[in-house]
Image (tube, rainbow, N blue to C red):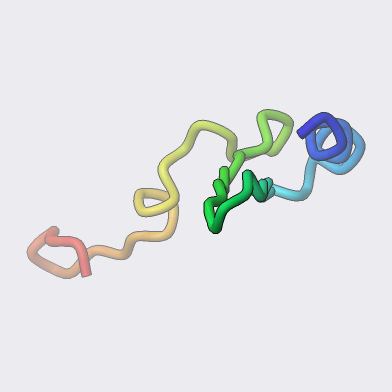
Length: 59
């Protein structure tokens, strides 16, 4: 996680990162992180890329 945080700081063009952990006995965990240094940090992806129809409904 520390390495990912450092890479986010060094390259703010990367928006997302993933950390995976093996915790034994067939179990694991995954976390998807959003880069707080990215220009679009905090904006909803759906709202940023959504298109609307003539009636105003999301396509």
